[in-house]
Length: 480
Image (cartoon, rainbow, N blue to C red; front, top):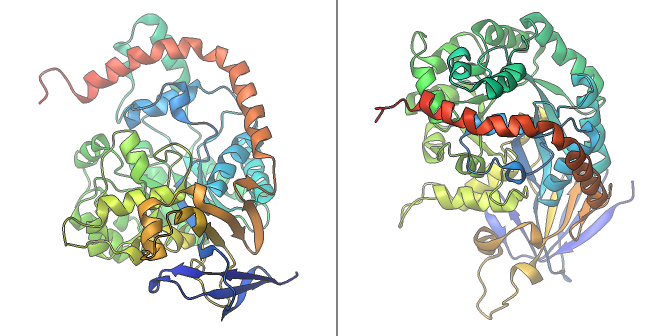
């Protein structure tokens, strides 16, 4: 592979954060071969590419079909409005947005695209889309076997619906889940279908959706194979209430530790309602927490206790969960929002600039790829880079200018990205993907969805009734 030399006016890194020292990066063989001082810098600022440590590679913005502002438990039902979709188009549209938003590495918790393909075929299509675009991905196979509507039996919810909506909703939640051994074997089948360089993970959707038997089986299989696990935990207040009513000695998180699920192989998405003692258990286990700031705000779940996570010693990474603030998968804006919410108030600093950068570019890589390394600007590290256009980021160009890192955390968005490089390969340049025609993919996807969405009219009519029933279930009359 031909070496590439890039001159930059400075760099952002997790050690020391920002620098205005001009440098040249030499890339060769997919890695940073060397770093030198440069006498002729360009207007580019170099930084490690970002990691989206929790996502589902969903094809379209959920607000486009009425899910905006809905609580998680109802929001999930709205996703069923999407008709069956070609899995390659779905993945290419989503992963393309991720690349344009600055994420070179994406965790795909694969909860299916409602295509007519098998799970393995869908996963293979996702892997093909990732290779065509050039992003690195991990794929967690969603596993669940209970509680399709609320955190308990569905019958009371269904009984509260009028006959037509009841039949519509019941028909979508009545299919029995495969047995536990079948679900565990499915992960091996998906792993074989993904191909070289992409590994499957066990993806139990969350304790409230997985039986004890399934979670124990996942813990045992992970310990036996070394395969990673990716799971939601305590995302919403209702999941917190459910967890507190489980008959587990020492509580749910202690039980997860007792069965061996808490380990360095585990990633926990959200932990919005994790308590200090639970965070200590997670930190001791070596598990990673993937915080999803915009998603938690968009679907009314809350604000994760990131400062408490850091104090407890947890390894914290950032995810977008397909619900960035503007639903555009802008990983730079997501990093800034997390920093604004958790950096501290007044003169108190609870989350420093370098810490938020580490969460965005380094801490999530092992959780997604299953290997340490990367997320640094140093010789021998993977050449996964963002090049930011400082002429656009610092368009005022005042005589007394702030440090580049300060500007990035004040105003940086995907529109300031000049180039995204993964393994030395340029995958996005000046707002366009180099591997696929993302505009054409998106247009084809939208045409297919518009054509097929007529089949969801009965469900769309049933959802307001489901919303009312869920509201009464989670907040009964007279509940304060």
